[in-house]
Amino acid sequence: MAACLPLFVTGAVLWRLFLWSRVPRDAPTRSVALAFVCLGLSVTVVRPVNSQGVDFTAVHDTGRLVQNLLLTLACYFLMCFYLYSADGRAARHRARVEAGVVALVAMAASVATLAVPRGALAGPSRLTDMTIPGVAVFYLCTGFYMAYAFGTAGRWSARYAGMSRRPYATGLWITAVGLCSVAVACAVRAAFTAARWSGALVPDRLTVWSAALLTVSSLLFVVGIVYAGLHTRVAAVRLWLRRRRDHRRLAPLWELLVSRCPQIHLQPASGTPWDRWRARGVHRRYHRRIVECRDGLLGISPYLVGEGEEADLREVEPAELARRLRRATAQSGPTGPSAMAVPLVMRRGGDRAADVGQLIAVSDALRGLA
Image (cartoon, rainbow, N blue to C red):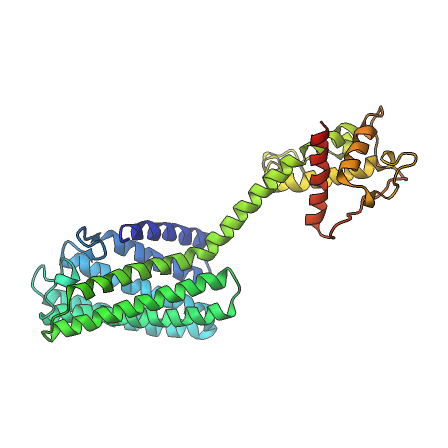
């Protein structure tokens, strides 16, 4: 499980940096991006313990100090995200106050690191000698601050989740659960540190389980942060694929109408390379094909009603309309819009999706006739 954490964090960092590049002046987006950058950097200075797979260790005291300072900065920027999102004018003042708290925690951790014997902070925390005052102070300062910061952020996430709509609400609820779980894990580990400082023994199983809770909670937090963005991107990909498929399904109808009414073929706004490139996009080709098919149907509509046939094309089934289109295109010479054009009004529904569905049904019927 711990081996997956760097991959998730790296993906989240890249995603948040991309979003920040799109709105560089947006304070909440910048805060989240900086929080993930600090979180990603903290992972680079440690490595997972192979024997348990749930704890992280630094190769020397400085590495442990840097890791914890980066984690406290990540907590600070995470709190700034909520401050800038909700408090408005008071956000800057509250952010300065929180920055002062982070500075005090960083100073205390740095002093404690300098005061302990060399190598006292290296290795897994469950194997560290907490009876050394400097070691205990180091872990207590960072542990309690992280519990406070993550707990506060989790409470804010839960409050905003109740005011949001899906998929943002789902992502915020996942984030809230992850943050609150991280806060609980940090508080439990801080309690274990205090107990070990006093000379009490903490079972290794409890320490391993608290480390596992911290890892799983961190994964939940990362998933919650990227959930809404991933959900939107997945929906965009699904829309792209559906329009690409519908564009191809409309090909039989479009080809038949263009052969009869070549003037319906729309050209790019200009011949510049930029406009030509944009015109090749799936969404533009999809909408352009719908317009061309409707224009073509309007132009050929006077030839779709023969003697003794249903004149109201709204009541004609797609298969019957396809047969009439084949017959109309068999007449020699091109045609264009006529004063006697018969509008093809949709029979089912009244939105654009129903319009496209009708066109696709006629196109599929034409493919079957071929």
